[in-house]
Image (cartoon, rainbow, N blue to C red; front, side):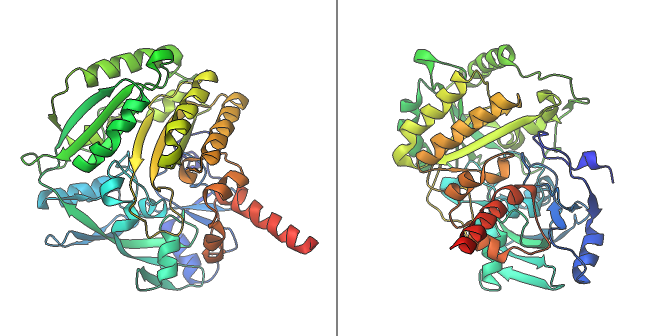
Length: 450
């Protein structure tokens, strides 16, 4: 298999050194032949960092496990192989009036990947994370056994695998509950806000009144325009389409340019046009689900626009009590560093708890920034964003990260040792090796010195 296929979506980390097929991995595991740290499931490569990479072994291409096994059109419970794409689940369930209760910013993620990363969407305040809607799954571990996991069966493995970033074994299939919707179309409303104070004043009411809510921030705007943006709210239209449209758009980036196309002049112009186009009318309008949920899916391989060095994404969450200070500080740090973010997204997380042992969403506000990889300068900015986040009592998202230090991870997820205790010894990721394993080594050295 060509290793260039098995990269992270951010393209800032090396591709996997080796990949094997799902059937070969299953045979190794069932035969008890998998070596320590030898494997890691790889879905469709939409993670931005190295949580989908395993520099010490091989990644397992799960895309051949792509069968939808069953669907109950009365209850909305769907059973499918772990390699099935979210776009295929949407297409299968849409004619029956069902839609996934939680969708991330792309439909090109696998079912197993959505579980392993406990992804979230624009309606966390209403539906929680993806893991909240998982009924059960089958997990193959290096003991050669296939474990059925649910809230009542193998409950510890169930909690560790949701949000466990693929470290507890190989998810083979899963059952999830979809939600009934009037149609796939969305009634969208865009509300301009002058600054972050106005946004914070709108956010809670927007969540209470709408299924979906998310804000776009003009990250480059400074001075009196600092923090301006658009708050998008949406609900499924009572009368609209029940047919899934073709996944992905007609546009693509066929080759990777030799430099970053998304430079500051381009971003300044883009932000001005985007703000004018999306915010010119306050009236609600009915739009297709593809454009509302998955706007970037309309351009295939858009990540190539960042050039050969790729991009880093930084997603943080901070508590409501500190958000009014921390979010402006994060945006100011990026501006002061002269770094422009292509799409800057701000939204409010609710209080619905995930069944996951480790889950990134928690009550508060989450800010997502994308930066072209400019080497040391970008890494310095990201460390500053980490510092602001942690000092505000927040957390940095591991499955969108490619460089956070072990201490930042420990501050973000103080219960990481509970996942390490349930990690399958045959599974490892580059992310886990540079964070949790370093922490574990430090702990062992400290205990030995006592």
